[in-house]
Image 1: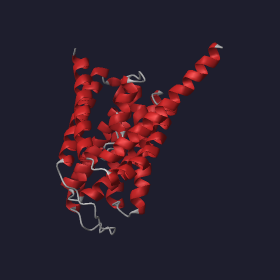
Image 2: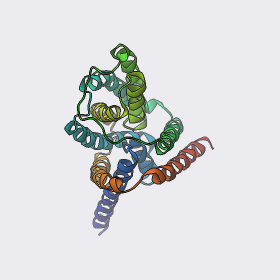
Image 3: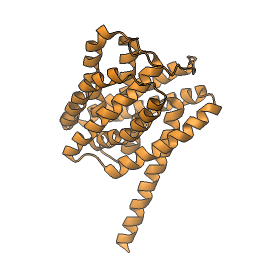
Length: 268
């Protein structure tokens, strides 16, 4: 009877994780997030993961969402493959290094660092809410139209992006997108698309290196990731009918609240 109760509890927990993934996917799709910034606090605050396992499992879940996005963007011909591959060449070593050194970093440092990332994501969300984005994007890619001379700088920055993303358990889009948009002068629509391609490669590598420390909970990671993929499709349909500005501002406030809570509880 005890064994049966344990099995039932395990199934309920996994199903709740999948449903939470769907909700995160809906929110992430509407707000233009990758999901990693939401996976990690869910794992630590709701499911009781420690910071190390939460980072690793979140990164594994990110594989599903980034791959789904990359496939969709590839069909729309919005990925700069040459830039993506070159940046991935440095992002992947960064992700590997991050996966190896994570256990040397105290948990409270990880919580504070992630809190700062959440605040940056929230501020970026507020910026997006105040800005009118043109949705009519050309389907043709001219990969000659970016600043090639700045590629070495972008690749160096990509290494650190991969390193940070691997440690914090996020995709890294919050870093990759500005690198391409600001340094390489690639239009934002193509920067976000190419970012998904890079994240798929780097997060896959980082997650499996994390597993060398037995940190990845594949069941929770897959449940969250697959749920988010389903939710993203729902969110995409909702976003066509709703103006996300109010939702962005409310959710930005929520992210700041979660971030401050993580930082304060780490310090006290």
